[in-house]
Length: 231
Image (tube, rainbow, N blue to C red; front, top):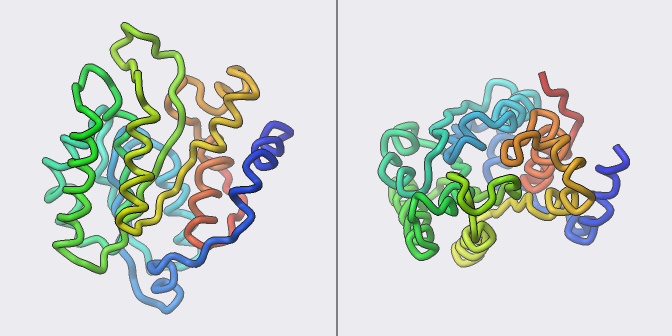
């Protein structure tokens, strides 16, 4: 808990201004059902933040929120663009959460920064073409450690791929939920502390998601973060 207190102290300047409520949250508050689709890598396909967030929203808006997880482990934005129709658009979403930067940065996939940007912008354009009212939420996830040069999952320039999400979000006026400040503060406190929440160096544990990721998502959506107890 002392480590988490340090993280929030270091990140407090970014938390000073409370965000306004996201439009889809306002619609839920007005009683309108909302369909959420999650799209991305293993961080979304198997990440505990998805059921944790789903549970938190269901508790606040019983019976109004439905969910679909179209993510797939080991995939990237090239796959995301190719499978958008079946995994996202077919669900007719009101909101789509997207994250692919962590795998776009894997060297063996040979996805350049320029291609990653084009793929992300194409997905955004196609989602909005299908329904201009769809809310798109981009996420910048966590650092990756323990994948040195020569490792099959080495990510030499992860920060450049993460910057794409910040830049595209700003250019398109989309909500970008950036988890890097909190995770970076934790990593700077020591690798042991980081691995207590991210045991394999890339995939946060249920505790990591419940204590660091989901509270930040709820805050950025304009919802008060309440304690989440991972199962």
